Image 1: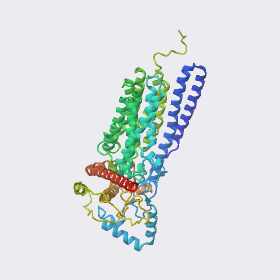
Image 2: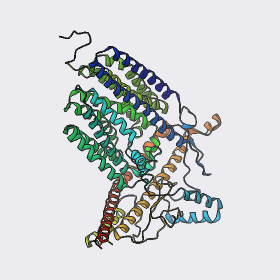
Image 3: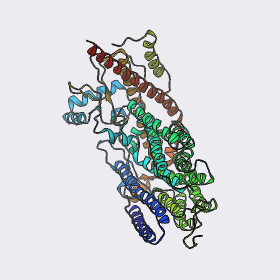
Image 4: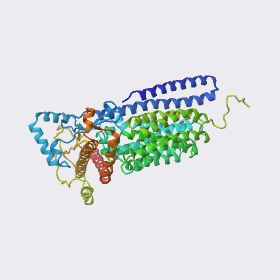
Length: 444
Length: 193
């Protein structure tokens, strides 16, 4: 895996983040206390967004490198088919994946492995070959007791609820809340983030509950708790219920019914529409994009209590971002999707996949320009966001034209830092409320 | 032991029969009466005697699913037995489906690569001095074809998998409630005596 893209982007971000903090500190010293409080609040939000960006990078880099390493691991069986696969670029070892030589010669004749046949084969192997016996004992050592210990439970539940993804969802909700044209209220903010976090945990747990055999067959997901038997399905469902009920209750009665309704709708959309649809039709990607767009809308409605144009704009930005993000990611997973029976554009309609990704990159430019028109941000925002929007559009174009693993990975990694940075810029260019005066105006 | 009403006793076998009797790629119906059946197709793993939990093994070589060795308690109730048998049967059904699916995939992939390379011409091997390869973009045609060929099979599997998953979880809930009730009854007896 090429180390340069993510380290470069990390360095850029560190430099930018550091510069941002320095500027804020300097301006805070000279401005009035009222503006100081506002600046400090926005600064803390920006810092949270920056921190999320760094762990985002770590999470995706780690996951991606793990999956690539798994693909490159040589299989020990002696019967190896003569063909190897290689990408057009011939990028190092992590691009070469060997065909898994699954069937020993005697099994290659029947299409369906017969149980009796397999048992017989096994008996002969064990009695005749002492090395096979050694392998057997080694395999037996890998059996684990399905006993849940209280110490392991937090880690298991964190993985079940996809805690890192939940954290990202919560940060987009926070951005929606912060961008709303209302005075920032900490109690409401905390209730919103907690409620959204719980709803996201519930939805992710149900998703994993539905997908156990499919997750087992994909490299990216084969270490999930239900796949590994670390938790029972009953416990997973109970945990989901224990998150969903308080989460939705918090949103409905602690914030407002509109936000609660959006939360319920999003859980339903993700678990009952998106998850089953993944195996039926490519429309799942569009449904999934809506699922990703709703959290910032929830943040906005939590602050304002209504669905304004600004809420739709934010939702639109997140909706558009999902396509370059997901379509680029799915480009490298085509084999797993095909074998596992997932209907994804990258497999069934590759040209559409790339076109849609490019289209929505360009839509991001348009939506950024619409932000000041809808009074969400000042006119500075589309100007300073233009470089990053143009860059992701450029990478989207490269992906569209080249249609290879390298361009898809570049686009994917770009999407990881593009979104937090865009939200950060939006926050820093937020349109001040109509009542507040500028620094230069004399008090009346 | 919890006494089941007559109506309930017929529910689980009916469910089991429903699952095994329908569907496209299901295993032939196995008898539900076997108690000491080998836990998985291949492994001869035996858990330690003092353990009273299920054991889960490494991913199967063919299906990638982890086999479970189900623990049979001495005082297993009929409900617990039905649940264990449902889980056992679902496990076998799942293992067979995915083993078949993966084997078919790899076999057809090999055939595809072979035929494509043949069509390309025999000269490639000599020219480059390396083994002939197909890049990911050429493989994309195969992935698309394989997915559409197996679409109906997956639809049937998905439907049955969702049903089984719900049924197993539902019965797990029933068994759990049953155990809680038993414990409470025992506590009541102890406090009253």
